[in-house]
Length: 342
View 1 (spheres, one colour):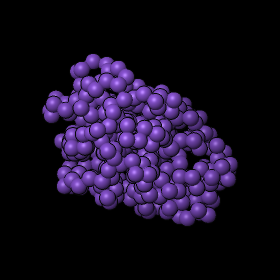
View 2: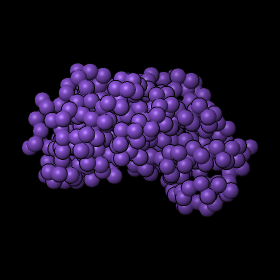
View 3: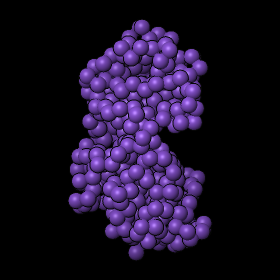
View 4: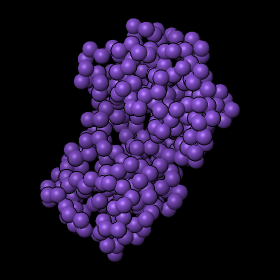
C-alpha cells in the first residue's frame, strides 16, 4: 500500500489542492478523499467532480500544476505518489506519460464506446475527455472567409497576402508546438519549416495568450490569427459586441487541428477501480458537466455540444496523432527556432 503523503516533492512545483468532496481543505498527508487527481486542466473542475461525488459517493481532491511539472512529480514520487488519476491538456503529454510507464492500461467497454479511437490510447493507458479545435479567428470587417485557403488554411497563412495581418501565439505555447508537430507529421519537416518561415516573413505579431490575440483582432491590430475555439466562445459570451468570427480550417483538406484534455489511471493507484469509474463517468453521463462551462467539445459523439459552440457549426477535424504530438514536440521546438519564430 502506498503512503498517502505529499511530502518530499514540493520542490518540483507549487500546487493547489482543492477539496470538492465536502470534507474541507485537506492538510499535507491528509487522506480525506477517495481519489487524488493530478491535473493540468483548470476549467471548472469543482462542479464536475462534485456532481460525480453526489452521484457515486466517491470523493475527489485535485492538485493543479503544469503538464510537464506534474509528470515529473509523478516520476519523482514513484510508488509513494498519492495520485490516482493524471489529467493533462495535451495529447502529447498523455502519450509521454504512458510511454514512461506512469499510466496503467485499462479494459473498459464504456470508455472504448464513448471515446473515438484516435482520441484514446490503443492500450487503454489514457483517454481523451474534452476536445478543443485550434483554428482561425478573424475580423469580419477585414477578412472575407474566401480569403482562407480551403484545402490547407494553416499553410495558406504563409501567403504574402497576409503580410502584416496576422497574430499568433508564442513558440513556448504547447498549443503552438502541437500544431507545428501536426504540420510536421502531415507535410514532413521541410514543408512544415517552409510554412512557419512564411508566417515569420509575414511579420506575424506574437501574443502571449489567446485572449490577447482575440482582443488584438477586435481592436484592428491584426486581421486574423490562430486560436482555440473556446476562447472565441468565452470572449463572445463576455463581450457580445466583440467583432471576431471563427473559421474552420482546412475543410477541403486534412481538417481542423484538434487536441484534447484527457486522463489515465496512475500505475499503482491505491484506488484503480474508483479512478476508472471517474474516467467512465466523465466520458459518458458526465460529459456535459465536464466540458460545457469551458466551451470545449465533448469527445463522446452522443453528447451534444454546448449551445454557443454548436452555433459555430459542424466541422471536419484532423485525425489526432498523440504519438506525433509527443514524439515530434522537440523537433517542433527546434523548427520554430530555426524559422525565427518567437
